[in-house]
Image 1 (cartoon, rainbow, N blue to C red):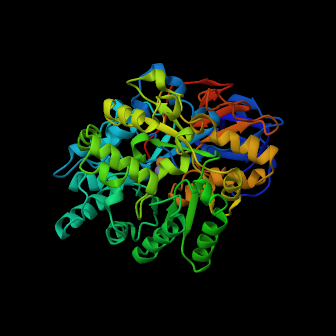
Image 2: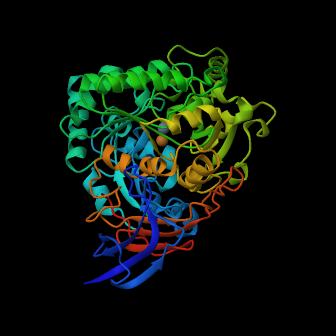
Image 3: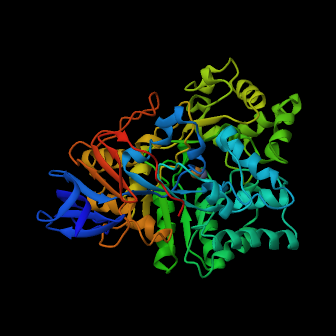
Length: 520
Ligand code: ZN
Ligand code: CU
C-alpha cells in the first residue's frame, strides 16, 4: 500500500484536548489512513514536520464567507485569508444572513439583505440545494446555517410586524426544507432588520424545526451592551422552550458600562449547562467588532428595507430623531453608537468611496452624525464598520471558558476588513496560547476543531483520527502568529507550514494552490 502523503516526525494534537504525541500521519484517497510510525511506508510525497504540530484543519465556527468564492480573483488575499491560517471549514450563514431561501412573496428581499452585508457580489438562491449547485471555487469547505433573517425577509420582507399564523407556518416550512437539505443549524441576527422585529415566541416556533436534528439555534443576540444579560437569558429560553441546543455567537459585553460583565453572562451560561441545557458560544480574539454601518440606527429607521431607510435619511426631522435616540437610547434597543462613541467607529469597507476606508467617523466631517448619515444615504447602506467597544479581560475570559469555541466572524470584503479575517486563528495560537497562556495548546486546538465539529454535526472532520477526511494543518508552535492589523488587515500569518484540504496540499509555505473546498 502506498500513501498519497506522509507527514513525518511531527507532534500530533488530535483535537480532543489530549496532549501532543509524537506520530507520523499518512493520507490516502482523501482520508487519514494511518497514524503511527510510517518511516517504512511508501508515499508519493513526504513532509518533514520535525518541531511542528500536526493537527486537524481548523473549523471557523462563525463566518460570513457565504459568497466569498464569487469575489473576483484580484481579491485573492481576501479569498484565501482564512485558509492560509489553517482554516479548512467555515460555518457560514451567521447572524441571520444566509443567501437562501429566496422563496416566498418577498423573495427579492433576501438578495437585498445579503447585498447590505456583502455588497454587489451578493446573490440569493431559492434553496440550499440551488446554492450548493452554484458554489464553486471555495478555498475552504462551507458548512451553511440557514438564517432566520433570510427566512423572515422572504416571507415578510422588512416589515416591522409579527407573522400571522400562515406566514409563521411558511417560515417554519422554509427552515425545515433547509435543514432537510443539510443546513447545520438556524441562525438569528436580532440587531439587524428584519430579525430585530421578531418576538421570542416567533423564534421559539422557528427553532422547533431543529428538533431531532441535534443541530443548534445560533444567535447574534438582541443586545451585547446594557441588555446583554437579558439577551443571554432569552437565547437560553428559546433553546429550552424549543427543546434544541443553543449557540451564542461572538460572545462579548460592549460599551464601557458593561466591561467586566462577561463574568455575569458566563455564570448564566454555566447555570444553564449545569441544568443540562446544551449551550455553547463562540468568540473572536479582538476588542473591536465589525458589522454594517447602518446597524447603529434605531429599529424604526431601518423598517421596510434599505430604500425606505435611505429615504428617511433624506428627511431633516428623521435625522434629528435618530440623533436624539443616539443620545437618549430607546427601551429594548442596543445603542451601538453610544457603546463605541464616534471616535470608536471606523469605516471598514465602502466599495463606492474606498478613500474613506480606515477613517474614523470623527474624521468624516465636522459633525460625525451628519457625515455618517450622508455616507449611509449616498452608498445605500453598503458600508461596513469596525467598532471599538470591548475590553481585553472580557475577551480573555470568554476564550478561556470551557464552552467556547473560536469563530472569526470574518466578513470577507475588500477594503480594510477587520483583521480577524486574516488573523483570528493564528492570533489565538501565538498571542493567547504562547504569549499570554490563557489556555494551553491542546485546549485551544479543541476549540478550533473537535468542539465546532461536534456542535455543527460535522462527523467526518475536526479530529485527527484514522478514517476522517484529511483536513490538516502543520504549524510551528514556537513562531505561529498573526500579522494582520487594523491598518494592514490582510497580512498573511507566520508559522503555518502546510495546509491539507480534502486530502490535497493547498497551502505550502504561504503559497496557495487551486481551490478545492466543498459545500458540506
Ligand atoms: Zn453577528
Ligand atoms: Cu456574524
